[in-house]
Image 1 (spheres, rainbow, N blue to C red):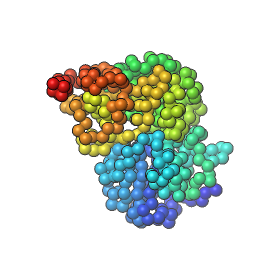
Image 2: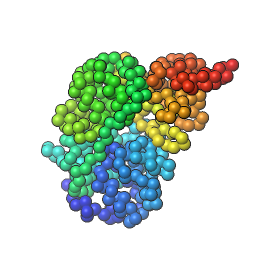
Image 3: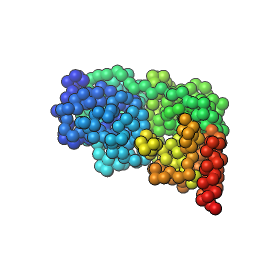
Image 4: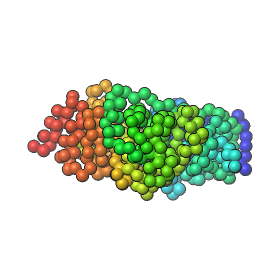
Length: 419
């Protein structure tokens, strides 16, 4: 059994080594009492480094750079406050466990939160994704006891032997409520759901556009869900009879996800229903799994796309705000699934309307998803089916779904290029 101590007796200086890399799970998986203690004790540590993905807390702040170096997987959520001073690791989410096992990505100490399971061992409750890989890679595993976590099994189960230090206790959990979509995002969502048939399996992320798509799916029936993360809108879709998971081709009757990125409503539903499986990214994102799903429709978003179909989901205005994440994993999955589609959807302009998000060229900004992988691009002005199209035809179709205020400039540039 691991050593147990109260949170007020935890001293990180006693168990960390110089230049240790300290990581914790994404989003609601963050153990707040542990990360707060780490930050509060930072002056006593020697050259420590922090490894993180999406943050949904206030833990990461620029002033911490005086004592910590940052290693960021993405700039989503609270992480973007520090990505300007971080080393960015542009990894496909599905590859992170193998990168950790090989030592290419290094994590020496991992901070997690757990709840004891009635039959023995512990559960991570709200997260699986690549957390098990973090645990197995780390020299030291510090686990916070949190009795508020839901009792879920699957890849969220942690053996007591994998925990070195058990810290008691804290009942706080990070809530991630669904944001309210804009009117433009609601229009984009209408275009998206027109492409999704009944009995399809869907993948949605979190954020305003996925929430808008979920609301627009109210008229659909017998959908399945297989996704990297899910939010509270999953409960709406199941209670409305939209999602039954009956026709997925595998995992019948089960919602499969890597994390519960929602509120108490989602956590209560997942525990009460017993129909939500928390799985590692080596299952949720693996092409051998996703390509066997029936009619898998994946929905992702980007910052901008150029007229050849190259998509940037990482940098805007010179700042790292997004991620490589699981986008390419799911883009390829939608294409590989029998009857499936890969949909990339976004409003045609920035919120102020001044800049088109369909651009002539990315001008050196990252290509997150290659033009050879894209399938269907959607804005509020329609859908551009790009798969199998020539570069010239792609440009025409993308210009046609751009905002009318910017369309002439795009077409003018296209005409000059082919004059």
